[in-house]
Amino acid sequence: MDDSIQIRCTKCKSKFRDRARKVQVGYSRECPSCEVVMFFQDGSPDNNIREALNNAQRLRRLLREEEHDKPANHTPFIRRR
Image (tube, rainbow, N blue to C red; front, side, top):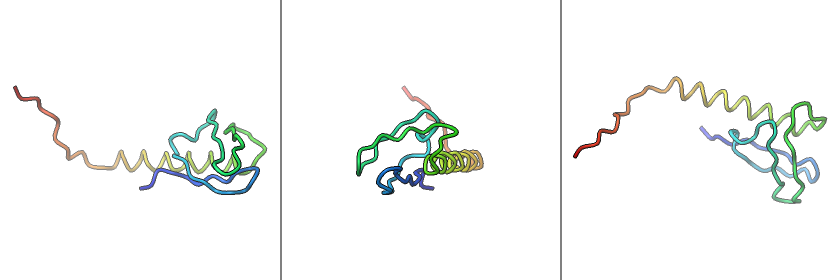
């Protein structure tokens, strides 16, 4: 599963992608097109910021559930001398 979300810039309205694990409250990101700095804060008046935070939270939850449900069929590393 892809672990990135789409973010819409508040100034130039272009869209870009960033990892959902990064996009959390307190994170800031510069738009690659217009270079405006976007601050991801809870309760932001900007719909684009709130939508990005909600999408990131939803995707992180799905990734955790997928990781939890994945069978642990890997063999542990054994160091041989």
